[in-house]
Length: 392
Image (cartoon, rainbow, N blue to C red):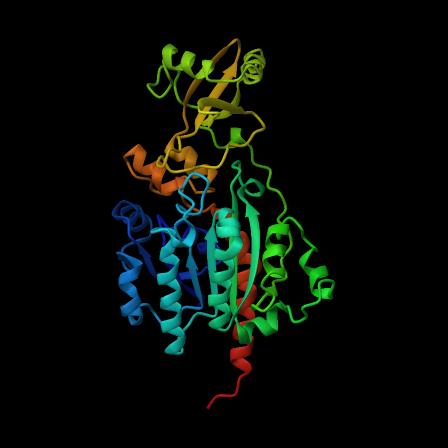
């Protein structure tokens, strides 16, 4: 059975993504009671532990020993542009250190997972000029893992632009069978030809990080770029919200939003109004030169979802056509759809909790892609190796 442990679980969207490939979660953790409530509503309470991950460092034996995979979508607050950019020295993103300590304890007891997945924002690659990610890879190297880093954007899987970094660490024995291991320190060795085979997966930032730390355990997984899904904003919008719903903004709020748009965006909206059918766009409020601006996006995709904290605003949707326009916030269910979440997934009844639940979660089809193209294949090789090994 393919077993995994989910750290920083949130409401369980990594688990949701792994379910398709029949991975079984045997233990999960998060510090948020609200997220725990949503998680257990959808997956039950049998394997969820609520609390600070630091409290588990001295109790690592509680975590099941037979998990093949650990996943950790550790907090991005100190790494993101919207955060304070304190990096891994920050209070929240620094909880990655606790996760590494747990891995050390598991290694010492001979029960470390074969594969580890870390997920975070692109800022992970540039935090402290790349030193944070290099230090993380150093930790994994010391624990006898080989590391590949890839970048995937939810825009290839859903109607949301959401670039994310995925660090995949594979235990040495399995890595030697499944990864192209970097051995030479020569700049133009054949390893780099494999690295650059899919440039959308591994950017120049990742290359520069490797070039400045070639002594670490680097390896490449056999992974191709995803085929772009045919999903548009219209596919996720709740089009049946009545015109008299309180969700739609009144004229004063509409006027204020319109005045916050640049002249070019006002013209785009006026063009949308001339259509004989309704079309949809999304709006983010952003600070530009110390002025709040409403930026309209009409390419069929939403901007990156965020939680309504740290100055980040909730995303707005505009419906225009037939000579009129209306505006409202995206609903929590629309947030969930942008994350590739099924409509039967139970969301919090409180809308703000729904925004928090989905705003800092992972995009489900991205995890499905990684499971199918990486984890399942690694597990299959592991099983074959385990079966062929002589039994004592």
